[in-house]
Length: 164
Image (cartoon, rainbow, N blue to C red):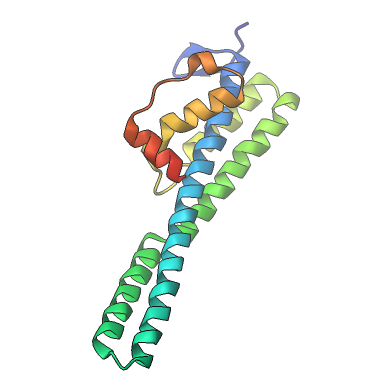
């Protein structure tokens, strides 16, 4: 059953459009999770190094406390420069919008669904991790009951997906 949905000039089914919406939700969720986890790990490392710096000061080892302080400064600089928690929040909000569209899809006509999907897809998020595209695609297919269409992923893609 072909509908009026068209992207890049070819007609597609409503289920294909719903797969695209599900992919958007999954992809943005994976991006959000990897940025959130990176931020949490950096925060944990900062706390450990802060404790170490305090212990070194207590032990009157100024050199090691200086190195710990320098390491803390580098980690804080990385966190602030890449705005890991901010990116995580942006991807999380974008994933939420895809999920809202997925929930609203049964009430929408084909053209309206397609227009809303295109609007979401046009909003490119800064810091997308392209390596997560294929794992997100496969997770979405499995969630939609389509294990027959899953595409093999590279070791690198699987490793990054595990981190997310």
